[in-house]
Length: 180
Image 1 (cartoon, rainbow, N blue to C red):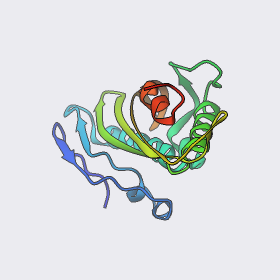
Image 2 (spheres, rainbow, N blue to C red):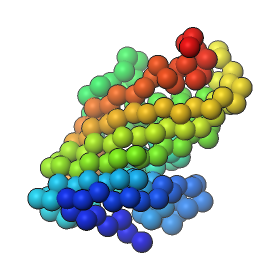
Image 3 (spheres, rainbow, N blue to C red):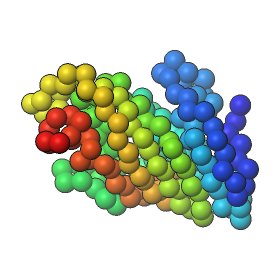
């Protein structure tokens, strides 16, 4: 069932994503719990922007690099690039691999997705268990639950630019790297 957007309203959708279902196509992509779309935006543009955001969210939820390549423009630019992270598509690929080394079962849910013009804002909730390694720290199965917010500029159906902020303090506390 394709994601349908009632223009100017909020939709409540079930969150679905599983590695087995990814082969099924767009229906298997992470679906936002709530979607808000500017009513003046052409439907085709809104649909393309939502698809790019869902592909990228599913990449974060699964680690499937093909989804990152499908979601991100070849000249993708991270406007809030953390120190030490490569610019462009290689940056998120490396970040995902690093996080998945610590939290192999990481799932990225989309709490809210807002589309206006060529911008998409995504409110993520990341959840999983710290069973891997974060630097020299070995996980003990701790629950991980933190949020992040991304702002995308979408061009030709792909994310061209991204500004993001993550609740890294909560994450580091849950990993036991920073004291409560």
